[in-house]
Length: 247
Image (tube, rainbow, N blue to C red; front, side, top):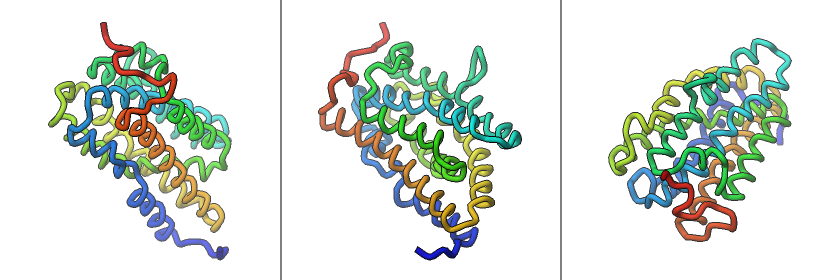
């Protein structure tokens, strides 16, 4: 590998190429979900397992902030925690996700307990939290740049779920519509920060590897869902259809 660094434009292009090639919008589970081919059992399994990822995001960001010595960076980054956790009484992405859980017929308390989450989901998400906690700041920040690619999948998801599933309304899908408003500000700041600070070839390669790793984390979660609930080989301890339903 040459030590010559990429230009700013080349680095950004390399980061965006990762999304074009590896983002989980290309996973067949998402195709099934967005075209109405998922059974309600498969939808519920997705909601339960995706909860573990959603609930871990603010903990990931808190771990990241605990390492930031720059108070201005902490001031900017902490809005991510507020976006997901909300206030003490209301708001936040994880509350909106539990509204979705209720809409698909699941007991929100069951979903929030984390019972039934597949081992592969836990391993993938926990690996992401550890990565952000331990990796150099440039790599830790670059791993969040999957948000560059999220608006397109959120838009398709909203359209597809509204078209194909009775549980889908503008209220029950509020998590996704809200992320369309929140994610762009996060992407704009983080992308520019990475491009401004990843000046050596080593740091640039680390940023590229970190974003690649994050796409693997997202893809692995969907592989687990496919294996467990499309091919019907859920592992011991994973959610079984009929569990955790609303009374």
